[in-house]
Amino acid sequence: MKKVFVGILLVTVLLSFATVYAEIVNEIISAGVIRFHIIAASESEEDNRIKLDVRDYVSEHIKDTELVAYSREYVKECERLANVRLEETGTGYKAKATFEKVYIPKKSYKNITLPSGKYNAIRLVLGNGEGENWWCVAYPPLCFTEEVGGILSQDGEKKLKNELPEDIYGMISGDCEYRFFIVDLIGNISNKLSE
Image (cartoon, one colour):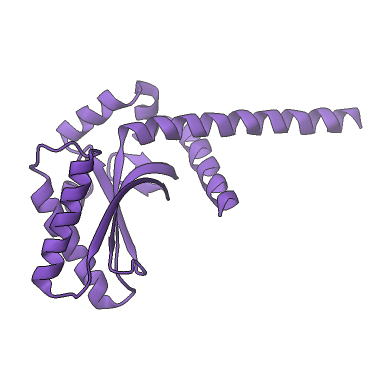
């Protein structure tokens, strides 16, 4: 009986350490990465086409701005650009942009994989926001290269390396898969428990 108790205690301690580790890693990554999230107005094919059109329009016009990706002005500019495009296409609904921390599932690009967890994100909700969503990385700017394979540019890679500790950058670039597995697993479990 004593061995069972010690075993349960050991597993509990290990899970506690793994959970704390995963939360710390997620906070560090979230501090160095800003995600971009667009939600379509509905599930219709037309609204999903509009979502991608707005994504392309906002991405094209925001990428050369001097605004910092997590500033209030950047978020307002994303909303303004989305509404310009929605008005041009005559959709009859508006976009609303916010900056918030949201759960995002694991996402792989060609040279990095971000574990699931809560990230700082610019959320652009079109209309009622009842449709499919689209994710990318706004900072460092990965959104603008995702269509050609999701490769983080050399400039983006340099910015990301500067934002993240070396061991955590190694984890998301594939050098430490067992640690990535732990962080991703705990992120998924935490999200399920908070639903």
